[in-house]
Image 1 (tube, rainbow, N blue to C red):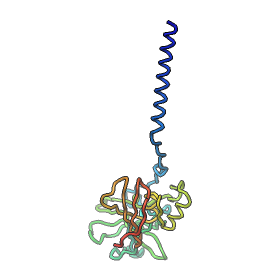
Image 2 (cartoon, one colour):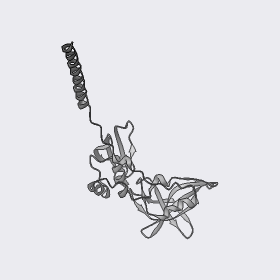
Image 3 (spheres, rainbow, N blue to C red):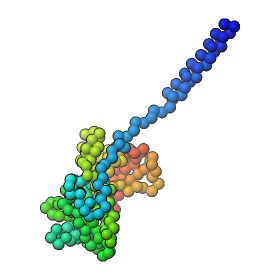
Length: 229
């Protein structure tokens, strides 16, 4: 009886050890989980403006443009409170730093019943204004939180290496650069038809120096000159 019991116990132990060994092999064969991207933990602060008074809080600190070459700005005359909407003066640059002097409203050139909410800033000794929303019958639609950082992006993304920030400052894109880093370097990109979340190609106007960049799983794998226009 004792011998039989020992044999049964030995068999059971062998089975347990074999199962654990098999499980260890299967776990070793599984691809390692990717570390989470530190960018996912960045949560830029927002102002959540809801009217003209709350939007004027943009004057309390510097702001930085989130998406370059996406937003137009116009000459603005502080004396007459007139913005020259008929002539675009330029486009806001990638992560351009602005000191907002005032937030005002002006009559829309296309719809007199709708006023444009404008952020006024100085550049090269002149005043300019960029649209940050609209107002109609006291109802404000403001999108400054989507346009502007109110914290220095270099602090928000301080985990990026120095060479990444150097490339951004020089508006350069290299293979291996993330899509967000490219946005900071060359501004808005237009998604090519047929792209998906894994393999995608974007076309960047880049202030008249167009680029076409192909990504695989969020990293640039091919950077080439784009077509003008």
